[in-house]
Amino acid sequence: MAESMELMILSFIGPSVKDEWGLSSGQESLITTVVFLGMLVGSYLWAFISDNQGRRIGLVSVAVVTSIFAFVSALAPNYILLVVCRMIVGIGLGGGPVYAAWYIEFVPVQNRGVCMVIYSTFWTIGSILEALLAWIVMPIMGWRWLLAFSSLPCFALFIFYFLTIESPRYLCLKGKIGDAHNVLKKVAEINKTELPPGSLVYHQISENTPLLSATNPKPGSSSFFTLLSPSLLRTSLLMWVVFFGNAFVYFGVILMIPELTSVKRKCGAVVLNPNTLANSILYKNVFISSFAEVPGLILSAALVDKFGRRISMMILYLIGFLCFLPLIFDQYELIKTTLFFGVRMCITGNYKLATIYCPEVIILLLFSTFDLFFILFSPPN
Image 1 (cartoon, helix red, strand yellow):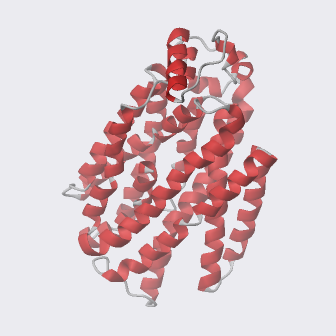
Image 2 (image 1 turned 30 degrees about the horizontal axis):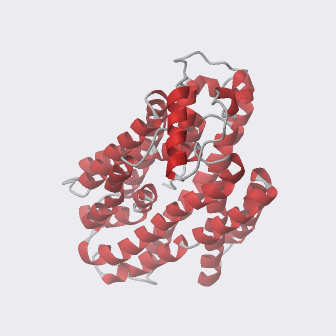
Image 3 (image 1 turned 90 degrees about the vertical axis):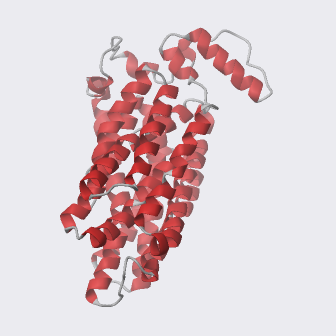
């Protein structure tokens, strides 16, 4: 939810900062671009830390970087410092997939599809809350207060850190079978049940062992190069394409809404002042479009365990394409809004299905690095 709010805020602060500081269009775009560039750097950094130091260390490190610099962004006295702070926030946001990977390592395979979709609903909740928060705060208090309020969920991560436990799968990968057994025992006690009889061994929980055994990387070797090995190269390339398309469309649609509103302003249809309540038109549009993610999640949850990951993604891609195609031509405002609603619904569902499918077919580093690598190219600058 915190990650979603920090990314959704990009739709609001750019136009306001541009008007307040007299920035050029390129400078405004840079505020958005550096966040994704930071995510590119952070994705590999946090994946490396979580793979070598543990998931919990990775989680708290992400929380520290993101929360501090998200709040400091609100205090930035000039454009340069704002860009630097937002880039560091992007580095922190690059650790978002580490949270998803930590969560998915606790979920049974047979329930993973639905559980990950439920997990993803908090991204949607964050998007809706950010749009609502901007609608309330921006016209009255300005973009600095919006940045400050939006950083609060990041600080909440510190509270939940003390409630988290290390991933038993990670412990097994590191050969700490005894520690993994203790974690599972603690989980069983919390759920008021008992562990099944028997001994915990590594191969029983490593679902990707056949996939990775061909590469047999040595301890300390880079998982990045493992992704380019003959046994994983085809899968890696295909997943890169999937995440590139998802990121390009998803963030492109989100960042397109303020631009469409600006076009209306320039054409004289609507007059917007960033410091007045007239901006409510923009906030209302973003707020309404955020609700498209709700049916997207419901649709993906209904499809994923019935038709499987790949067929479900194919269905949503087809529907999204059919919604996007009429936008080539000029449409009435209601039709245009409906079509964009459909596109965001489908791409949201597809994004969540891809985040379920990817860790099941390839190791964490692809999930946390290359998803964000291709997000870098998604902002329509």
